Length: 390
Ligand code: FES
Image: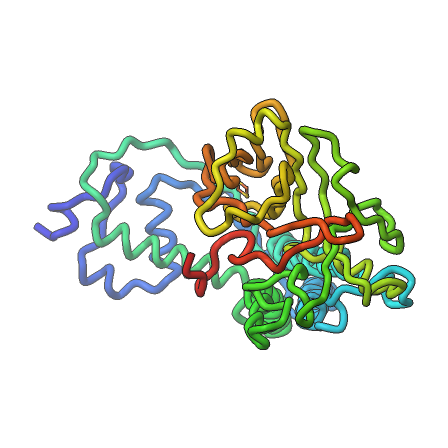
């Protein structure tokens, strides 16, 4: 008795004569394919070659159309790659500087090139399948498996069937399609790899004392003694409105940005600060009865000015803007993942995934009666990063 007879495969069609192991070893791929379909009870009703006459002009044209789509995928992928690695383009340009229009196109161009690359690759694969893969029509009876797994004969015939499908797809002899498909998929793949890698191009630690360093924010004075004011956000970058304590009612919250006199009239600098993710701060004026219950953080006892407290707007979870201040409960809510921070308790997290308090900005009021920062935050704002210790 042969091993095949001892371990018949699941769903074997009864009545089909089975070859011995020696006969099986001598069969070529076509014979194995036919045997495999018979053993599975599959009847091939129709298995036409889409191009029975090889090398016709129509066949070559179909091949070129497929190659064209793969080439478009490659070019669009290249466009994506170049766009994402081009610092001139993604660095912020203020409106009215002449380059803003180009800067504003950055994200749409990224979306368009990547989208086109994926679309063209998909169309290329679809067209190849439609034009070159034989459309077989086969009928098979449903079988229940007996749980004994596949026998050698089933393994050999299925491998032969897969190889036959690859062979009939004719991809092996279509070098133009193979090359352009490889190029399209390769360039698009490079673009996808470049996406996470591009964020490492700029070294955030190049100058440890710079306000562009990850550990600092634009609230950091650029030289000793420089005054950094709290500036109201009006939506107009050229409009500078500084805040005084009387501008906020009890229980109110206002988003403020840093302003330094050296920036007055500097259109680009005034607009750029609104684009800095680490710049926005919530200035909160507590109601007098709530201010009595405040618990201050050790070492930050003098960071507030009376009932006024300034916390970064950047969530310590993954950096969304924590813009919702609920006056009645004194809670600050981050809409992204519902973290809540207690404004009466140095903005420590009391609900949700955030684990660190919102960084507090030390503030006071200067001789002219305006709110000013007494320095930068004493800890990095926003989420954790590798080098962060606290
Ligand atoms: S970013 Fe704020 S809760 Fe996740």
